Length: 500
Image 1 (spheres, helix red, strand yellow):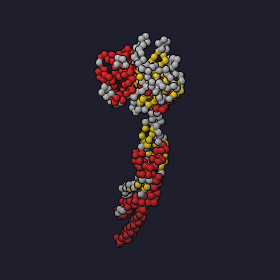
Image 2 (cartoon, rainbow, N blue to C red; image 1 turned 180 degrees about the vertical axis):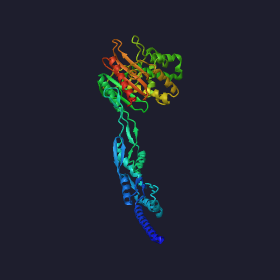
Image 3 (cartoon, rainbow, N blue to C red; image 1 turned 60 degrees about the vertical axis):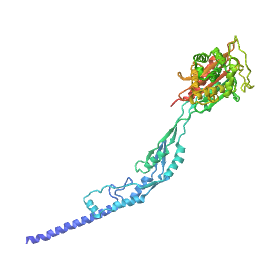
Image 4 (cartoon, rainbow, N blue to C red; image 1 turned 120 degrees about the vertical axis):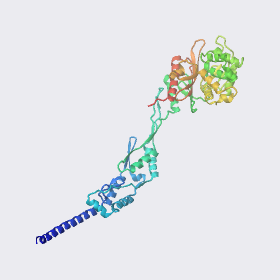
């Protein structure tokens, strides 16, 4: 009897438990179904967390992230770029479809079982699907960013009235190829929406030859020199030149050039003619001794001995003829030097385009004359002959003149060491192959002409520099030699600019 009574109780309890289980299962199924309508926890679309939200909210999240402007830093500028402007387009539909497939594609009951056991699903990440119109991005960089934010180099600027140059400022040019890669990476990132663009540095531009010419003329006017001065500068790297003359501080024409007394600088043509006649035979011991005394000691008797070897009677005119053959129509020597006490006769009165001018005069000596451009071009021919085997000297005298001979002539000129004029304007140790000259009146010893003709070798470039000065009353040595040094220093600094 007792057992029969307990059966309904157990049945009732079982029914109650089963009912509770069914209710709980239904509740769980409803909860799971609702959860299944949303993306599973841990899911990301294109790096954006969308777990627990429905497709519409997920779409809005992804769109909000990838349509937000990226921040571009270029130098000091900060630029915000709308992705659509540079051709960035999301393929949102395909990413949502892939996410939906992950959400609904698995086993319903397997997912429900995991839900019951409170097991989180394996995190799923849907990769970014987007396109970038690279041509639009490149066009935007070329047309909007580079023109506005690139910085051209600032050339070195001369210090007015001085001999120095302020250093230039390098320019900045956008590296477009690298910028495209960096921006594309940033557009595809959900978190790193800032990019620092790289750029290329362009070297600071050199000052122009026009800048240098103005500065040289300022040096002359600032020094207060009121005679006639001529200057010729030739860049031996690119052939650019500066050529001007001034009278009483005002520029005058150099077409034709201004004739000056050549004085001892005419010994360069004498040396050249001697090598033209004798070639390598001119390097014998006696000839070398005469050339050294003529160039290094600036003595006149050795110059006369060399010209006598060219021709005992018309040696100076041989030198003049040689200069004509290489195109120097304003350079001549019309008589031997001899001495003031025992002067030699004038062999020929020579007229040139330079000494035929009537608008300016330097009272040039009828025995020897040249111009700054003639003297400079002769040195340039010697340099070109020595370095490349070309130039007018070898072209006119191929049987006698060689590169080795031209280099030997430069070596001789490099032994003229006086420490003033052009040499005084360059740092110690700078090679200056040159010949200087000046003439004083025999009766008064007043100097009216000072000259220097040089090839200058520097780290920043080699050049020919020729300066001639004349004053009708007196070319006072100290201020004029200081002016030569100042002009030389200005040119040296132009070729060897300071660094920042």
